[in-house]
Amino acid sequence: MWISSAPLRISLAGGGTDLPVYARRFGGTVVGVSTNLRVTVVGRPGGAGTEVRACLDSCAAVPSADGLSNPFARAALGRHWDGGRIQLASFGDVPGGTGMGSSAAFCVALIGGLTSGPTGRQGGLRGTELAEAAAAIEIEALHRPVGKQDHYLAALGGFRRLRFERDGTVGAERIEPDPAVVRHLDEELLLFFTGITRDAGAVLASQGDSVRVGDREVENRLHEIKELTAVVGDALSTGDTGLLGAALGRHWEIKQTLGSGVTLPAVDRAYRDALAAGATGGKLIGAGGGGFLLLHVPTAAQPTVRTALAAHGMDEQPFGLDRWGHQLVHVGEVAR
Image (tube, rainbow, N blue to C red; front, side, top):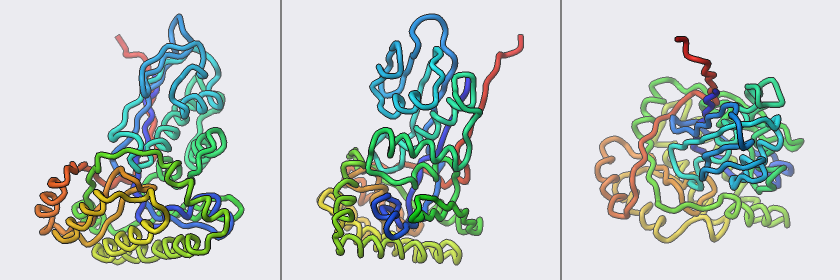
């Protein structure tokens, strides 16, 4: 049996500039960090009977991967499974479609496990190879209009400055903030669930179309979002968490102009109340349209901010920042 897990991530700045339609013209940059919220996939060779037994979105026993309802699992098994009997189950710390990169983390965890054991076609993918294989499931196999930031952060973990070059290559620079800065961010960054799930691909599609047809306004806004990665980098190196909050807020202001599906009136009202209660800034994680609202809130203001968000029906999601990316454990027979 193997147990394979990958972290969910928060993008601090630059989101959207990793989309291939933008990055291949201008080059993209994203600064993000992995969290201690994870997606875990458990796999083992199957016994007699049906070839694939899987509890993913739902439980099923099917004669081949083609019978699975989960498109990511279908595509991953099609590329990385040897066809022998297999049993799979998955678990996630947050619902899918909430902007935390859960589909990428699932692909990283599943492929990392599949390629490590007797059911895989390769000798075990790790690091950037694993990130690229997971990204290929979404971008090449499923033709989703997404970038690679989620896959790299899920595979590598930690604070990262990811550079998406025009030739399609990705540079993944680890950022090492002072431990005291990380502790402050752990205390001052809060996540609240809006209660709304959505398909990130649907939100990103219109943005990609605007860049594809040369919409200068959208291009310039994405340029500005990319420039905010330098501001966030400075905030992480100096420990100026208030500057980070302001950068998150500016990022969100720009992002809301990229398309009509990025925000919702209920989210806007909750965000305004959070600022009035003492948050310095924040944004919806991921493509927008729902999911989780990330806020920077000084410790003294946190009780009033929590009260303000509770009034909007938004539950807080406890989390921490984490340096670990993909992790894999093999479990053998227990000695008797």
